[in-house]
Length: 291
Length: 291
Image 1 (cartoon, rainbow over the protein chains, first blue to last red):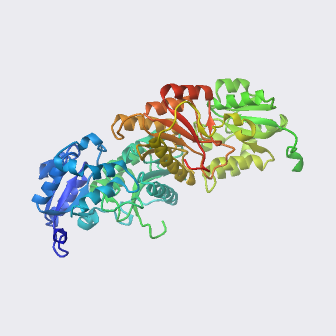
Image 2 (image 1 turned 90 degrees about the vertical axis):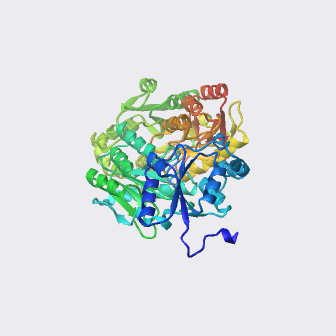
Image 3 (image 1 turned 45 degrees about the horizontal axis):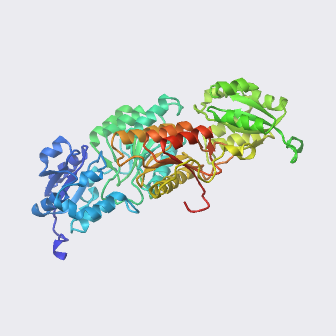
């Protein structure tokens, strides 16, 4: 096995396994600017058109065998999993090639759940075959949120109170491996993210406003996205982007807060200029100090 | 103050302060069948037509002064708060009579939040004026869920696993005084109740199914409603009814579980016959024993 480990002092070739959204493109552009050798694997039905065009190969869930063959032949020894998955694959998706079939018992075990999260198991599946899974922190840290106010607007004291409440909620959720996001408005947590995702949760907050279930002046309230305390920070980092800002604005929120260093800001310039224009703050909190 | 306390061996006259839904009527009908002396106070904009017609008085949020005068004149010394509140009152709702104005500092303090829940503070507001607040357990315990299977269908082992997961989630939520309900499907918590309420959360679960964000065969999954660990069990008990069963069915769930003895089953006969017909189990869990 030792021969399969990348040399400590050698920078390996990285396979970017790309889901949906704009993040894969942004990561690739950082890798390019750093001159980092890489290959793109587009996930079928998920990767954007741009990503697919830049990809060396496009693979579906049932093509795990082909994936491993590609990784081996292309000489990739590191893997970065980036982008969203809009459709959680079902069992039928894995009726695929022989390499998939051979690994099916492990894959099934991962899909069925248990103590560890699905993604931790996916990482484990790669690692047992000798690949090393890296995170954004390792290869494109400029995409991460920094501590403090990132745009022009500052959170008020009441915003910080909502931030603390929503953060406490995301941490409880995180302990159970449920969601990464929560919204607090006026001293009360009003929405928690489940399987619907952050965008749908923000749309719900707008409805809560529209139907009068949540009252009070706008803007008020904060969206918090925070990594699960138990999660592997190499994958599925909380991410915000221009759409998050738009939806938070429509929900009447005062701002958005993420865990500094452990959250992605997608399309950073656009995200911050939108927030500046719409009057929202974008804040990176530091869990090691008081908020 | 001692003169205002109801005599330990005397059964007092009870004021039923009625919000929306069918539960106030059901409570009143239990009180009638027990020959228990009572008066109904309908909350304006919330109480049903039936409740309003049976009510001695109908009062809005700004009429706290009138409420206390009514309680005193009608000789009520106990209070039961029952039924839903669809619209959380805002500050303007309390611009009312002089009795409201006089109590406004306390009311504001209650509305603004803090460590205790709003309802605990409402109870406190009544108790400081010498009234005793009673719960369903004290006056209409036949409306509470009992332990075990209440209808014809039994939860399967995988249903019980989902039940435990969703229950763990509601308990985490409860610690933060957020929601009372969660849904787990196929070993995964997919929805958590915030300010939207249980019905809207179940509709969301149906959407998660329809859009493919939650996959797998139906029926599968469990709705759990559980009192918050910190809540006062005299008010705001989790409740299920025929509509809960309908929506759980539409969401493809296998059943509904509530905390035995600490949850209300509204329109019990209709709820159970609907569940029997649609194939859903209705289960009362006991936190003191293994589920």
